[in-house]
Length: 71
Image 1 (cartoon, rainbow, N blue to C red):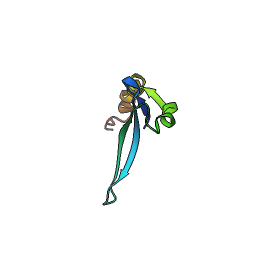
Image 2 (image 1 turned 90 degrees about the vertical axis):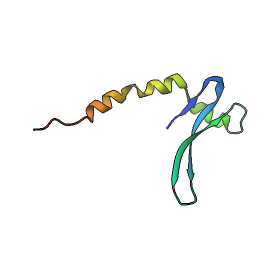
Image 3 (image 1 turned 135 degrees about the vertical axis):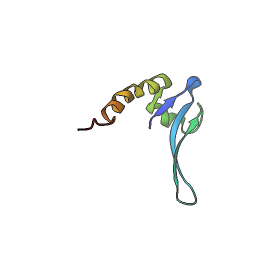
């Protein structure tokens, strides 16, 4: 998962939490400019537009893993 820079400079960063029952939950949290860990995440951030375009290859992947033709 990548760090996404949203309009206004807010960074959407990955996070992992473990619940009391041991379940691992993957998600994101927003880090606004001025937050203590903002500068740490900023070098890893990509603009939101670029993050959306990175998924353009999904169709190619789906084509490769599509149903096989029967013999």
